[in-house]
Amino acid sequence: MTAASPPEILRAPLIVEFPFTRSLGPVQSAFLSGLRERTVLGVKTSDGRVMVPPVEYDPVTAEEIRDLVEVAATGTVTTWAWNDRPRSQQPLDTPFAWVLVKLDGADTALLHVLDAPGPDAVRTGMRVRVRWAAERTGAITDIACFEPYEGPAGGAALPHDGDFTDAVTGIVAEARLDYVYSPGRAQTAYINALSDRRTVGERCPSCHKVYVPPRGACPTCGVATTDRVEVGPAGTVTTYCIVNIKARNLDIEVPYVYAHIALDGAGLALHGRIGGIPYDQVRMGLRVEPVWTEGGRYPDHYRPTGEPDADYDAYKELI
Image (cartoon, rainbow, N blue to C red; front, side, top):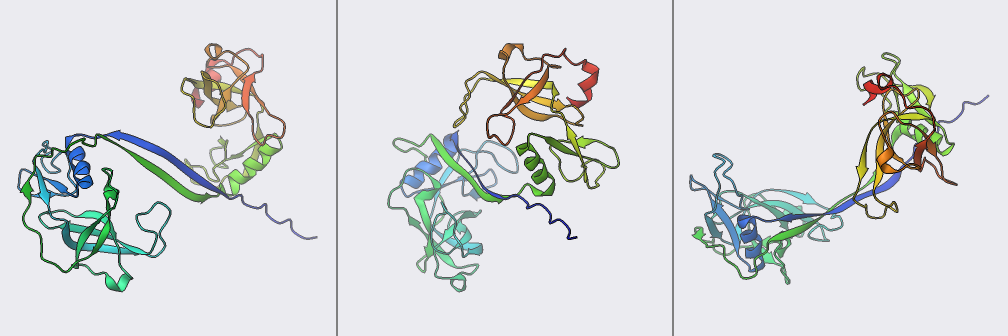
C-alpha cells in the first residue's frame, strides 16, 4: 500500500485596490498647489525648524502650524535603498533608489526616488535636485524624481503666503495591494469541503472549541487543531446589520442583511447574507440554513428554516 498524498494547498492571485479620496487643509493644499507651480513649501515650527513635507501640527508641542516657507529644489541624500525591480505604478519603470532628501533650507527629509544608473552611483551625502514632471496636477508625482546635481546649494527658507490660483483642495490616492494568497492547510480543507456542500471546522484538543472557518491552531490555547468536525448545515443568527449602500460589482439589491451565523456544533459565528425573508424581519435567534446555487462552491445566502427561534441563552456566548 502507498500512503495517500496530501491535498494540494490552494493558491490564487489576489488584488485589493480602491481609490481613497481626501480633502486637504490649508497647509497640504498649499504644498501640493506649490508643486504644480514648481515651488516646494515647508512649514516653520515654533522652535524655528523647517519641516518638508509640511505638517499641520507641531510634532513636539502639538500646536497648529501655519507659517509657510519656500525651500530650494536642491538637497542632500541622508539615506537610501536600491530598488532593482520596480513594480507597477511606482515613479520610475527602470531600477532606481528610494531616497530621503533634506532639501536646502529644510531640517527634515522628503521621501522620493532618485534616478541613477546603479547602486554604485548612489551614496549618503550626495547632492541632488528635483526633476519636475512635464505635466503637473498638484500631487507628489509632480516631482518626477530626483537626479544627481553638482551645482551650488540653495539659500535659506523664505516666507511664502501659500496663495495659488485655483488651489488644490482634494486628492484621490489609488491604493493597490497585489499578491498571491494561500489559505493554508486548514482553510484549504474547509474550502474543498464547501464545494461538496459540507461545512467542516476543526476542534481544539485542549478547550474543545470548534473553529469555523478553521484557523489551523487555537488562538487561545496555542495548539494545532487537527480534529476535523462537520457542523451545521443549519445555524442561528447571533447578530446582523442592514446594508443600504450598494457595493461595486456586487449584484445584490439594497437593502439586504449581512449576519453572524453560528452553525450548529460550531464554537464561533461566521459571516453570511440572509435571504428569503424581508430585511426588516431578520432578528437575533432566527434559525437559518444555507442556499446553494447550481455549480456554486459556497453558500450563496442563508434562508429561514421555519423552526422556532433559538433561545437567547443558546447563542449568547457566540455574539
